[in-house]
Image (tube, rainbow, N blue to C red; front, side):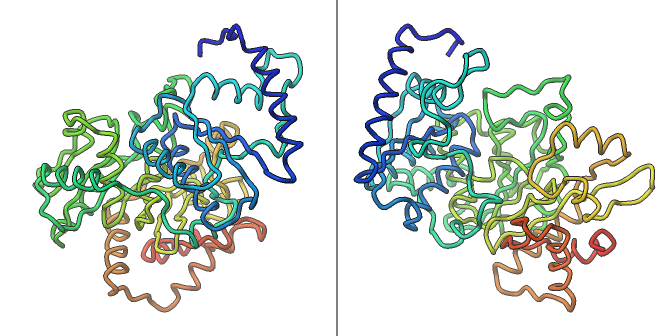
Length: 420
């Protein structure tokens, strides 16, 4: 859309208002809901839609619902959209429509442009709207725990995936791990452009260096795992010469015919995923792939399932010449999953800097994940108490008190001062 009103937009809004009125009359019999699929963001199209279908699977949505899902024509990943369409077709009382024009029309009904005089159309709290804006994170944890993955590959896609792994030289049935690091080339949406004058965008505090993963990658190959670096766009190639470490993102992706499929298949089929605070991780998470999160920031960025592990970036105060405790940072507003400009400025003014996970910390977490998955992991005395200490830094009403994952054990032991 170029910002100009469509010549029939006024008529269409009027007709949509009539539709909303009729839907209200029918609600005692059939609850019609309209939801917008945010298809231009990899995290939203995958995580949010998986969450929706899991809730439907569990029967958490109205019994008499009839959901109309509207998607744009140009999704950020065509494979995920194909899976969503298949799932919608097999889900009773669910209709999916792909129309950019209709998507923008309904979006304008929900969120009028600033220059519109007052809110037109259907109020934002109307029961007509189906909220597809979130993936349940920090809302509730049960849906991800209780429902199985909702998206699946067709038989033809499974064969295509097997051919892809063979192309990479990975033997049939050989285990592989996928790694990803957010850098300055990363974007969750092709519509987003990093601005040099915006530190939240350009000097993104969530970025990290894929090279710090390489010690863990080499160790994994020694254990018989292949390692694949994922990502749809990256700053540059890996420096590794290890033949079992495949730089898919840096060297291969642009040369294969169906990279959207490969992006999803690789992350869905890996033994576990090693990544950071970037929406691409959902391509593994929606398939219940175990997650080993590194460089997570702020404090509430963690695993969603009980087999997930994570470690945090640390907070160094150069004026005090020490690390901030996690409780101190929670009190400064880092107890949620976002850090906005005002908080970033306040941290900078106070002298607080973000310190990336070290190669040693990343290796420790990967080794813990492998041990947990093969059943050889043994906790040490005091580990549970340290996990509880981390949860205790959050206010009692914060969902992180009950999050199902685990802070990496060695990281936790080495962070006793920050957990005080």
